[in-house]
Image (cartoon, rainbow, N blue to C red; front, side, top):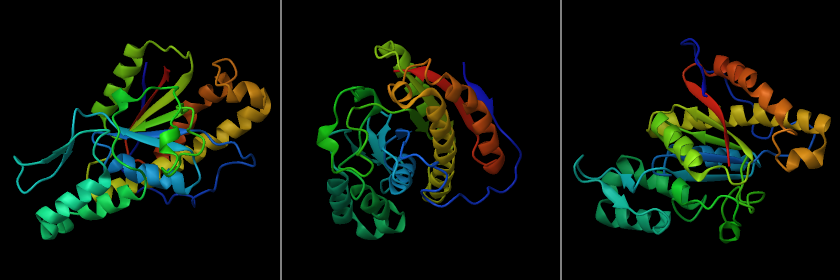
Length: 259
């Protein structure tokens, strides 16, 4: 059952500096960011988490990658897992450099191709299998085994898609995973704000994980068993509530799910 936490209409506070708030340990939670097309919101959050030295991967949940075109009825459509950000950049630059520079798509794709090869689809992700072919992705170190501790989605339909997919998979690894939705409007300005908010929440979660890992023992906590992480799991609602007070304009929901 999901727990919804919302609060007020105040102005979001400034985020701690990248790398702050991790605790005294070298331990890092592993994160995943998800939006519809693995282009804007999830990639901004992916970049910020990777720059803070967190292990991180990212995905989209749509059937196809859709980017704005010359009209609302003429989007640019690409396949997940098969089309690189670099090829998208070059195609749009050749089509209409003025349009796609003005609407921010070329800047976005320039950022994306510096983070990883191309957009991936959540539903196609073989959880628990090695991701050795992604060694050049930012944030790849620590995610080689194909497992994360926390998933951040960026809108409710993506959250629903992730939860439904996890239920359909049937939890073969019997490993808990915290799934948050941080509601972020799909534009470049809001993606920047949302990325800062997600990093702040990641810092708070990681700080608590470091503390509980010291109490329960490194080996058991790192193995991800539900019993070893129970004390951390119990702290998550309070962490989210405190974060929501700092970021009242980013409504959030949370649930504990299973890989």
